[in-house]
Length: 266
Figure 1 (cartoon, rainbow, N blue to C red):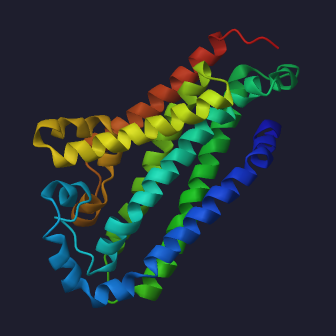
Figure 2 (cartoon, rainbow, N blue to C red; figure 1 turned 30 degrees about the vertical axis):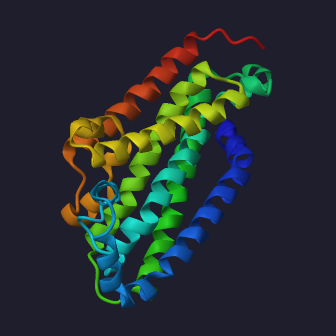
């Protein structure tokens, strides 16, 4: 518990910075919806001139910006999933590795705690902040939706658009924990984490614009919680849920095993 509380304090500034900046930016984007809704037909006509691959990549062939769910799914949702995933993976990859990178592991090793306790406290802390991060987004979005809507929208679809980002953030955080076992220097953690997330996003784009590459969707979490699918189907495909839960379970379990076997010099 002491380690958990210590990590809450150590990571609070990063959490506040990421949450405040992204939530405010997202709220500002949603605030543009009424003006977009008033000119929905004009925007739909404009989209017809865009390349089909680009339209498919952003789900514009399935949802319309004329309703608030469609607008959010095309204009705002990507910021939550992409930048939220970067934050989640950076948190997961650094929260454990920085003890070695900053030479503070000696402090923890001197305490009467096992490595499993250390990992558990770190994982719990990261997951707590990621959950709080998503709750803040969902609460703000609900207030903005209610204030800016021009017609009723599906609450179930809204909930899916709230659950989807949480799942993808937890998935990337879990992968980050596994990476942290091998990479301890901050100079390496940050580019690897950001690069990994961006590659996954690039794969999701490629799987949308090319039929030959459609199977890439199984390798990128961004396709598992695609906004257009969540809005239309109002559910997450079971196979994608299984994959995300499997990746989380394997990554966290491997982190425990490898961290216990790791030779840590204090």
